[in-house]
Length: 432
Image 1 (spheres, rainbow, N blue to C red):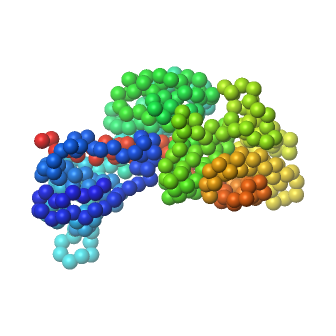
Image 2 (image 1 turned 45 degrees about the horizontal axis):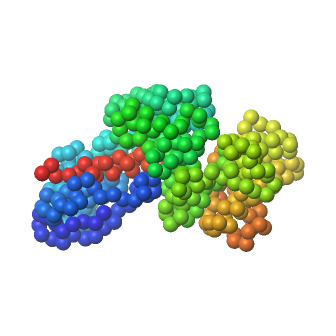
Image 3 (image 1 turned 90 degrees about the vertical axis):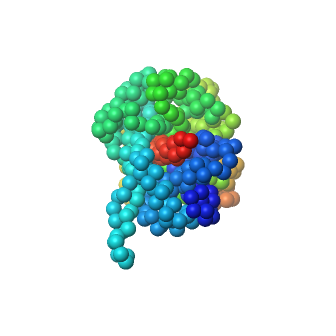
């Protein structure tokens, strides 16, 4: 955000850009920054310039730091008198408040200002056939409640979301009506034009029309996003791809997925199907016999959850889930036995798909996510890197996910917080 010439003291304002990972996440979903309501085509009136400066101060404080009036003046390039007027207006709106004092200087201690955390609340959800998890956070991104449950097949989306959100808000001690944004991560293809889910093999109830039904019931902004895309947003914010502008996230779990970040932007494809690598034709796997089910062929039949489970059992690592089998093999990899053979064959299978992606994109960094990617850790990632190097002349760095906790839910929260912050900034408009 660039500061406008000061309307109140006539001084020129410095140009300063303030951004965040959350903002990048939402911009990638919305297709870019839009002009704030009420500013397009308006002349440089004092009221408009006050509005722009107020937004600039609020944007600064949304970054999470406690700042004094002098620091805000320094960052914005406007006078302390003008900053005081800006802060007064924001305080009257209930958006900022004094959060403490800065000691150590000459004279009275300077007041430290911060955004009011309760000025907005958001919710993020991660929905799978056997899991629904939700978190509620304030506008600073601090989580105030989390819930999770087994939806037993994830039936009607509206009832599922309503029940989960009500439980999360009850735990947070806030009313559902206080939420200003909701972002839902789910597997499958999301239409980039309508935001509707189009193909979710594991969630048959999530189909076209689900988003409109949620919006009608919610009466607040709702976004449905592909789960792997959200995980990549989290990975770029504070995971293994922190601040990386070019990388791919290969999701290894029950299903397979790919998120591609190029030039800091998420690539979705024309139909939103970019990254559905379960369908990828690869050597050693049959072609699909039924395109409605990726497990019938392609990369999914080689490295998907069922294939990994079967391969693990073949090497003597029987477990309830593929991730548990991989974790057991990693623990035993330093000892003579079948662990090395299992991990080696699994890495080769994964590398076939990764190399196919690298031939097209040459990303430089490949993050292995999902339950299997996390369970394999560096033991699997290093083997995949070596196997890819034997197939493809470039040598991408291959690392396991670095996001603590649930990356899809983390990505949903980042996107929801970004949406709430944008709404707060848009709300700072002179009523005249």
